[in-house]
Length: 505
Ligand code: NAD
Image (tube, rainbow, N blue to C red; front, side):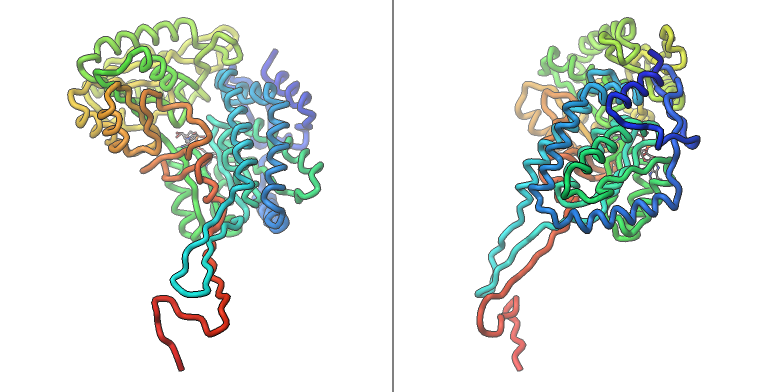
């Protein structure tokens, strides 16, 4: 079935009328075959402004709804996602090109974070703190923050929004979402499913969730608006370098989830049966278009040749049989998002050659009936050292493999990139594993597990040019609330001053 007919069928089965979104501002293409799957209307400056005002009104009602009741709305939302998992997964695949299995994983991630948020809605704990003064009670309480602005990237068109959305809603906020201009359809579907649900949930105010469609200009409007106390932005470090300072300038809060350049260290004690599939999934999964994609491997010189030859064989077989239509069951690697992504991959490979690398594979493949999709054989590059191109994040399946002699040296190279998202070591030596965890400058440091594919229970995010934000599990919810310290005096005489200060008449 042509991709546009498939999209219409999915919206029909979700009982969502796409016609109110139709327009001439934004053409949406499927990376599967390059076909036009929708023409959409973009928000104007005026409509964005109105949506922000409405979102403030929604917040003022929702903040007073008890948190467990807010959790109940998210519980019902997760049921809707469960019921529509297959259609949503297919839409994710059609719109961003990841294989259907990963499309399902993306919807599952939304379900998981909703479940997490439901439990959280009864656990937004503060502290009781011992006061130094008699008859004083000191407490720390968490209150909702306000309107939360979420800007998301194309490669996780809905999961990252859900990480923010589910937590923000149980924390008592309203949310405005600007999805990537490359993937507005899955955003429309999820937003509409939530809207329909809100209509059946009396405590939910109108406009609790708002959707803004458009390119970076409408994103910038959110970024600059003082009515939005938190901007959670996921995307390239280039975007974060613009968004972060703008939000800071108005003393807003930002949660930045930006680019990664993730590395694996394979030591001479590594179990290759564990290392190989993990490196492979990390490097070629999602066609190298994950923020946590494995882009560099430092291999101990003793095992370098054997690991490299195993990787080469695996890459050869993937290139031969496993690249293709992401809706096909046997496919492991779908298309790149667009021609610009293909050009940047080819440019990176050219630079890698100029910098002394030996490049294997990486060329475009023409796939039957999908001539306008950008399908590539994942590239494997043997490098003698970490050159300039290796230090950049190229959002495509390129894996640089570099031999090392000592773990200290590998660690130094590992940390010598601007990004600091995910990292991994493969070793059977406990001392090496602990040394690695202590020294890795990333937000994620795994042992005998690849860099890609985090669970929602942990805090997700990274350091340096990855932006410093933490989303999803652990105590990331605190981003979406404001902390208040409150001291109450319950004595009968004039209260004592802190630090024993005398201020008597
Ligand atoms: P991108 O930076 O081009 O766009 C991301 C979003 O930011 C889009 O919605 C875009 O419209 C918006 N945007 C761009 N410029 C803006 C501006 N000046 N003001 C406001 N909004 C603006 O990124 P992309 O190509 O969609 O995604 C790929 C990048 O995202 C990669 O670098 C990847 O590593 C990163 N990413 C990071 C994470 C993470 O959690 N760390 C997750 C997914 C993707």
